[in-house]
Image 1 (cartoon, rainbow, N blue to C red):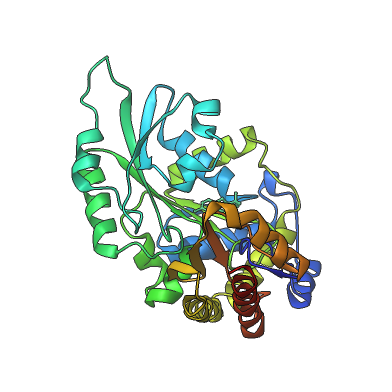
Image 2 (tube, helix red, strand yellow):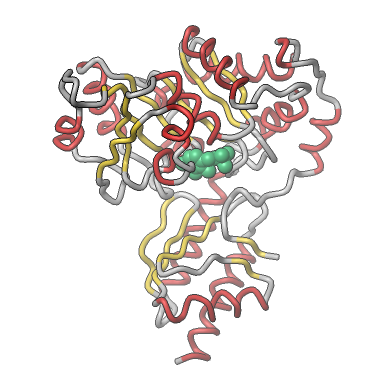
Length: 336
Ligand SMILES: *Cc1c(COP(=O)(O)O)cnc(C)c1O
């Protein structure tokens, strides 16, 4: 199977499973798991934060950040298409009585500065209290420009708001830009990192923040059911991914670039763009289901939509993307 639906579909490698098998563990709800504690301390240190907490998923890490930064009747500003607003089941509203203030984004995921400033509510009983601004990097595979990020985190600080980064794919930005984790996290009050995307761990995310923030996050994590016991098994997979799967993200980026270039040469295919490990192509609606079925018959999994995303990862090689481009080419030839 060549599965380009997401970079979440990777299986743990033999070496990762071995690292998991020998990890020292304890009950992490009691604070006893050495593998979890070491991972939290190490990532916090590298990212320039005082503390960190290990989570099962980036969704739960993001939700926890919203619950710590905002209370009932508060609101957060987020991009209209940002994952934290658009793709997490409305968790903040469901569980926290927190209202989102979504704003339009450009193709790099940026909200206009005037829109952000205009959305920050005055202290008035008619309004929800604006507490937080959230950004996402990478956004749809694209690296968010660092000067924009520092302007927004600066604006948040100036207006007395907190700022949170959904960095589920921040390691892709790290490899694409050559910046350090600390540089990419600078200015934010909290950051989510995910290990089960391009890094290839089966489970795991980290929430970064200050001491008090993380103490409160641990309380919410327990409430949300995210207090795990011998989770050092999972932390060991994440540790392994940090040590062995970061630099290799450059291969995913190269494969996505090649896939984008090859698809651009296929008559009838319109490549919208390629960035880090993602390629977007536009497919007319009536062609979506037939193309998806054609590819599936050839053991290629792509979720074909009018705006189709293909994602490269650990289990995809150059020969795989070559085959995908050629099968899509063959389909176009057969149907025109
Ligand atoms: C995948 C993703 C998440 C959620 O990650 P899970 O670990 O699957 O819950 C959050 N934000 C972004 C930007 C993502 O891509």
